[in-house]
Length: 471
Image (cartoon, rainbow, N blue to C red; front, side):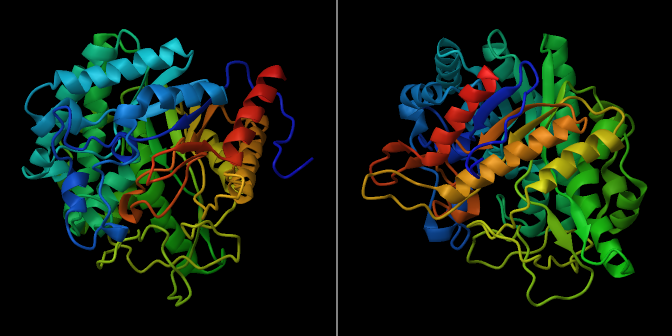
C-alpha cells in the first residue's frame, strides 16, 4: 500500500467527507457589496502585523468566483463544504442587515445544494466588525449579545436551507491569540482582556445556540482547535506541570464549560490574577453548557511541553508577523515546546498523525456528554512547486492527509464517535499573520492570475472519497 493511498477501511454509514474555508481568507471584496472593516481589515493596515504587508482586499476573489469554486468542489466529489459567513459583511459596522451581503451567502447555499453538497455554516471565523472592537470587542460582555443578533439574522435568511450550524471556529485563536499574544486581530497583548474574551465568546455561543434552537435549528455545534499536551519527561514535576497548564489553556478552558458547565478548578486557580471568576455572572455557565449536536475538532499538530528553558524550542503559535508579540499562555508564559525531531510542515509544526487518534479517543473517554465528533479541519502547509507540466505534485501534503485519515479511522475502530472529516483547506488563501506566504490548499491559487489548479493532494482526496463510498 502506497503512503499516498489511505488504508482500506469501512467508514461508518453516512460519514461526511468535505473541505473547509473561512470568509476572511478567501472572499476578497473587502469593501465591496456593502461590507465594511472587520478587525482583520483594520489589523492588516498596522505595519508589521502581516507578513509581506498583505491584506484581505482581494484574497482569492471567491466573492466573484464562487460558482466556479463550487463546480471545483463538485468535481472533487465533496459531500460537504464548511464555510463561514462574515459578520462584517452581513452587519457592516454591526448596525443593520446588509441585504447584499446576505444575498451572496444565499446564492452560495443554493449553488452548493444544486451541486449536491451539504452546506456546513460557521457563524464566527474571526471577522468581528471593527466598530464593535472599538467598543471593547470580545473583552466587552455586550459583544456576546450583539453576536446573537447577527446569528439570528443569518438564520432567518438561510435557515430554510442550511441544516448544520457552527457558532465559533477556534475560540482559542480569537481570544488568546487576538487579545493575549497579539498574533491575531485585534492585536492586543492584555491577559485580562484575553481571559474576558474567552468567557464572553463562550457566553455568545450558548446564547446563540439557545436562540437558534428556539428558531428551529436542529444541528448546532462549535469547533475547537485541540492538542495533546505531552510532558517531555513524565517523571519530571516541572514538565508535568507545564503540560497541565498547556492542557488547561488550550483544551479544558474550552471543553469543560461547554460539556460540563464549569471551568476546571485548576484553571480558575491559575487565572485568578487575570479575572476569570470576575467575568462569570450567575446563570452564565448554564447558558454556555447548552446541549450540542456535534463538536468540531480542528487538529494540525500536538505539543511536547517542558517547564524548563530550552533555547532550541519554539512556539508554533508565534505567527508570521515582523512585530514583537506576546505569549498566549496567560499566567504560564514560561512553558517551552522542545522538538521531538519529527518532520515539520512549512508552518514549522511537527507532524505526528497518531496525535489525532489519541485526541479523538481521549475526548470520548473523558467527557460523558460528548456529542458526535467531526474533524472539521486537518491539513498542512508546504512550499509547493509548480512543475513544468503545470501540476503541483505535493507529495508531503498528500502523505500528511493520508496519514491523518488513517488515524481517524483507527480512532473510530477504537470507539471514537467520529462522523466526518474536512480537509483544510479547499484553496490556498490568506493565512492570517502569514499573509499569502503559506499554502494549505488542495487547490492551488496563482495569486497573480487567481487561476485554480487541483493539486495531487486534491486528486488523491477525490479518489479516496470515491473509494470510501464504494467500500
